Length: 214
Image (cartoon, rainbow, N blue to C red; front, side):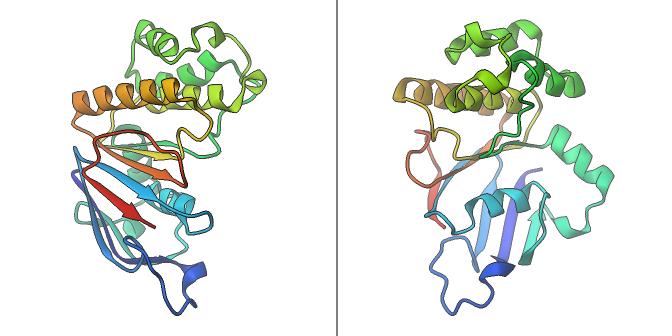
């Protein structure tokens, strides 16, 4: 996948609004592989909805979203499975980790489906993100900031043309936010991947191609 396009896209819940002041909604927007994008938004403007649309979890929108030349409304289940395994990775705002599993078990569960990372490389990521001592701790006992870092490692355990990150540093201090930005930049460079980040305030410090207001 080299290109994600939005054509006059708008959440259905906003359809009765007379005026939408946005760089994304009701516009023609392109996200190119290999480029980094920041989407800044106020709460309630559809930030997480956008991520869910792009990941195929929701389709309650008007307009058209395409991966390359394919309208995603026309994609079948098998196609979505393949896309989520090989082309599109995501870090959800609510993380969606398994609270009863350890941090490492959460990551290995994803990696067992893709075989993308060696276990040593995964351990190295835990240490680089300051949670090397939390690998065998049940996720439910970790702070939200620690869980965000676990979710990032999990998101990196697959090939990707685009990586979606919904408020990825909301609970991180500056040091860990910088480490996350560095790791993401390195991973995107290795894969030639694009990155799409959403934020309602504090955001990842990346070399963004474009910043947009939702």
